[in-house]
Length: 563
Image (cartoon, rainbow, N blue to C red; front, side, top):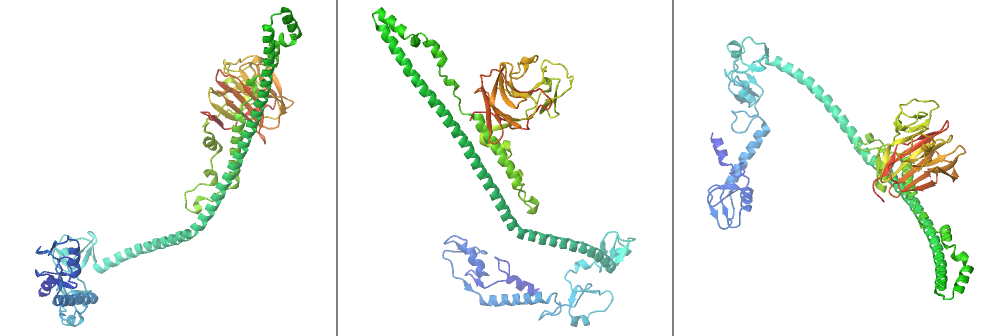
């Protein structure tokens, strides 16, 4: 007890541990030097106080070391250190702590080898390995040593618990038996945990190996992606040059044509001015003979002036503007071509190789429609499909509503006002504004027409065929493989012959322009119709002979605003 009371006097009030370098204030209270110094460092200047008695000091007092208290504190600290090193000490060895050899559960005392020799050997004095947890070794009810294990209640019990207590009649085991069974279970658990730890270590080694490989794989991936982007950039630059070159070519062509017309008009202006001067001069003459004779000599110039003007008039509206459709088609096909090529040539390694959530090169690339959206401000429209209700009974329409071909038999479709008599059909979609582009695949053999038509077109008779009326405009490939353009029953042969299975069709509704292109290399402009459209336009398809067919590709691009 005296030792415990003395220990209490050696506790610093601030850190609640044994003093280290203790100092004494003028009020008599003691603190560790570091404790009181840090306390005052956190107080305001000129407001220093004792943490216990709250005595205030205007000036920070000098600390006086307490050597005697330090020696006593160091003695206790050394004894505690030796006691910790000795483990559980014998309670009878007062001077120097001696490790205990056994603990008597009845006496609740730990004894060294020497004191154990003189300890009672009676049966009630149960000896065990040195321990300080003596309360856990005795029954909380009967205060007797725990000797058995109740299997029913999973509790350690004493003899009295078996004879008179609540565990009477329960299944019992000795502590050793129960302990061995529990150890066996623990060994099984330990075996499983060991296996799990080995698996975890294996995974750690695998992940560490992967971590060592990641920089190299990342470098390779970086190099491939860089090459891919560089390829995209180079092809975009080449495409840009090609499209800009086409724009420049068209600009020069239109400018030359306009300049030529301006020169012709300037000549015509001079000629008209001369004629006007001659006429004014005759009008100002007083002598009728002179006037009449002058008129007679210039009869060809004057009398036929109106007829001559009509015959040789230079029509400004005949000058073609820039072919926006050709520019668009060139850009669209260029994007489609280089994206397809990059998909074929470049592939980024699988994501699983690096545990990175990345996509393959083909997934990373823009598809052609998306690329067009970004560069041309166009939207991807739904697929253009054929309207079966308009298809005649002698044409077959594929299940995907994209291909029209000659049937050879009467398909006996229900008669509707929309159905054509001859081998023809229209798209279900119509266009009443904006710019639109789509592609058509056509057969090399046979006789076919493709184009645009108003929904009010006739459905019976030869005049209902695309181009045989003023409500439709068509491009025709005749059996001699020559191209013809048809509108209002006027067929004009083009200088180009059939050379490509793919056609591009570009419609600028507001500008009244419908253009046809062969998608060969280079792209070839076939013809552009100009008109003032007054109704919505449907795509139309006409096939005449066996082996004739037309097919709509899977994409249709429409632009919602002008460039």
